[in-house]
Image (cartoon, rainbow, N blue to C red; front, side):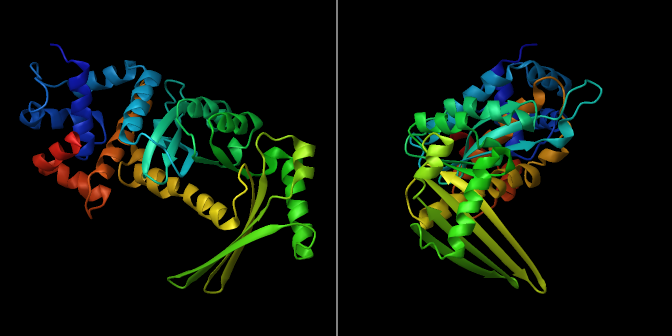
Length: 349
């Protein structure tokens, strides 16, 4: 029997859109929904078994498949604007002890404005994000966008890559940048003590109240940093940012101060929005992968199959979001499982 790759991909995508989370469920879907699938492609020899599906996706070139995903995602929105958040996620159950393979770790680029995954790249582990992020950025058209990355991505090479793509950056600072982090914190702390009399800053503060919780965020941006640029020679650096967070819940309080470097001279309100938008990748992508697509429960482990199946799930997430309506992604998957016309609408969007 012959199973053309377009048929296999269509089967897998339709099954995942309809709630399938493993090869067995996809194989059963193919048997039960063969008539529906034939609306789009011949499926002359039917659909593969779960073992055949596993073998095919294990052998499929993961990087080439991810490149196809990037091209498709780019076709959905020609111009990327606003915040592009870069972050990584590990699929915990993809760990293959018997095969000696670590759990896969995927770096994703998320458009906060379009609420879509733009690109992804598999890396061997969190420590290799530093080398994978520039490769991911190279695949994207970023002119005019703001790239936000957590402290792991706060590297000169990454900053230079973003600037070369005619984009801006906001990069989180932690201990991995040593003296840059210390100098930024010392300067902002000293200036705050004298109410910033010796420099020029902008402020933006928000207070949110919900379910007995009060959260205050105060963002301070300073562009008077010639001394810092001279000392550290950081590509494109134009401002430093301090975010002071304070939360009160009943009798408990939590306070935290975070620091960032930025290639922008815009005011604190603009920076505050971009930093807040960055965290959209947690709810918009990571949470969806775990809670809607059950990513952390997925036991697919063989060869390239874990990375390729993650690509399928990201494509399914983007397609579900493209269908307008009040239903949640979870509800849309449920509806797609029994309403063929709704699923056809998703496929044709």
